[in-house]
Length: 351
Image (tube, rainbow, N blue to C red):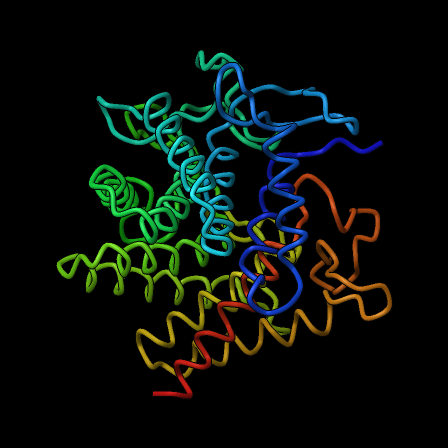
């Protein structure tokens, strides 16, 4: 009787679409797409509901832009796997909703959360641990990720323009000057509202920014973004990687405030450090990627029952009470890490 979340279901669609060429996974992607369109999609107002009950009825009908971004990301991946024109049209529809309803034409960027009818919500938070602010790093990171994927298959000038603007949002507002970590929350005018540091998002952003620049083919931005990515990865390596190879979760200006090691942070560490090694050829990044991978194999992979444990303490004690599958625990980070690692290692071997 567990509720069904948009994030889990969209990420299932993305994962099985991305893996479709490697095995008999497309049937599961078809199932995920069907359920998203039949149950999550709001045929009256457009966009996808945030949360359904176990029968498929909306219990949180808010339109969270973070969720719409993951739906877009997944739809594009499903289109790449199937080449169904109606899937691309749905992806375009989601883009136009995000653009038409959420884009801040005065200050740029995207507002966080809307009610079902697309009125700006009073409670903008993505989850209980987040701040109730108009804009967040997290939403902008994943809107950028989704627009990057969309631009691969649809060379629309507005998609390009908004993707370029998102990269600039990061370089001008979201990445803290000098410190090279991400600021997490802002008001509508991009005034910072948080000093917490999320190492998983820092290392994830370091490679997603590079991905955006590559697809845009913006040569004037490539070198500065590559420098930023290397410096961000070095900062995470220096401040967040423990002796056992695992990455800590969060810090503030005084130091580590959460030393637990979450599965998704380690997965993004592998990709982010491999990316930094490809850019810099500094061996320390390749070694850090290997350390993250060994930590995953040693502490997170459940060899008895399968999948990865959500998180362990600094001492390596598993939090068994945290579900392996939930609204937030899904195959996206772990599967994408494998896909990216295989691709990048093949490139390194080939070169």
